[in-house]
View 1 (tube, rainbow, N blue to C red):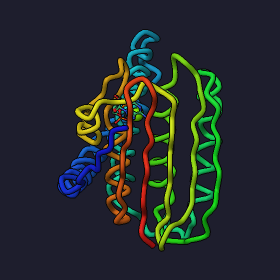
View 2 (cartoon, rainbow, N blue to C red):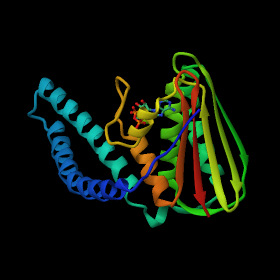
View 3 (tube, rainbow, N blue to C red):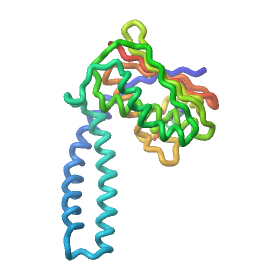
Length: 225
Ligand code: ADP
Ligand code: MG
C-alpha cells in the first residue's frame, strides 16, 4: 500500500487569488446576462438571433456556476456556519449522488460513529464530500463496486474515511492531487481536489491518501476539534 500526506501550504495563496478573481468576474457576467435577457425579450429581434442570445445566456450561466463554486470555496460565509458532527453533511452528499452511483453500479455505504462537533461552513463541506464521493464513483465506473464512507472519532479528531475499489493511483499521481486543472478524465475540470484540500486546510485538517493501482484508494481526513 502506498501512503502520502500532501502539504497544503500552496493552497492559501490559491484560495485568496481565486476569491478576488471570482469577485471581479462575477459583476461583468451578471451585467452581460441582464442585457442579453432584455435583448431576448425584444420584439424586433429575429427568431434566429433569439437562439444565439439563448446560447449565450446558457454559456454565461455555466461560467457563473464555475465562478460561484470558487466563491463558496474561497469565502466562508457567516450565515453558512453550523456546529456539526458532519452526519448531516455526509448523508446529504450521499443522497445527492445516489442516482450517479446507480448509473455505474456503485453502492454508497455510510457508517457513522462520531459525536464530536465543530464549526463548519455547511456549503463547503457539502461540496467537499460531493467531490470526494464523485471521484470514488468515477474511479469504479468500469467495474462497479462499493464506496465506503466511515466517520468516527479519535483523540479529539473527527476521522472521515472514504474508500473505493477503483482504478487507484501511483505515488506520482497522488502528488498531483489538488493541483489546479490536474485531471486524467476526458471531461474533468481538475478543480474538485483543489476544493477538497482548500476546505480541509481551512478547518486545520489533514488528508492522508493510500492508494494502489488497480485495487483502490482510501482518503483519510483528520479534523481536530
Ligand atoms: P476531476 O475529477 O475533474 O478529474 P479532481 O480534482 O476531482 O478532478 O481529481 C483530479 C484527478 O485525481 C482525477 O482526474 C483522477 O486522476 C485523480 N483521482 C482523484 N480521486 C481519485 C480516486 N478516488 N481514485 C483514482 N483517482 C482519483
Ligand atoms: Mg473530481
